[in-house]
Length: 122
Image (cartoon, rainbow, N blue to C red; front, side, top):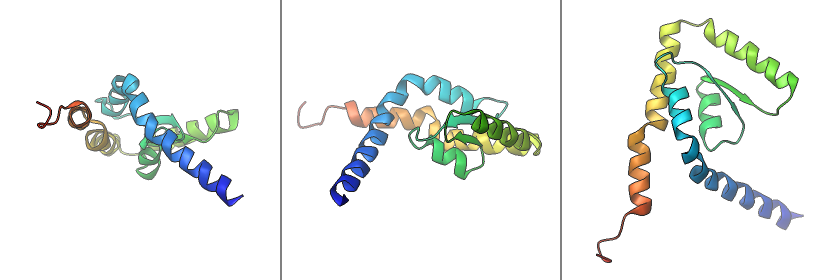
């Protein structure tokens, strides 16, 4: 039992790490959603890289735990509550999160680290 628990924990972390490489396909969508001038709250499913945790911890939207009508209704209520906040503060908070976690400079730096040729090979 303990071995299986450890195994599935490791598998879960590996899958989460691999998601970082899948997300590049959707970077434009994420950046558009996060960086929109409107600063709109985000609805996202759970376990999407670190985005789910960032959104939940920073009150920047709603993280769907499952794809059910109950969850969708909870998302609507949460987003409605967020939209009742001061619009300027909400926009600033979400745009600050987008800049901190999802700007192109971060992606460029990481991709350069991954794909750069070491000086010893040149």
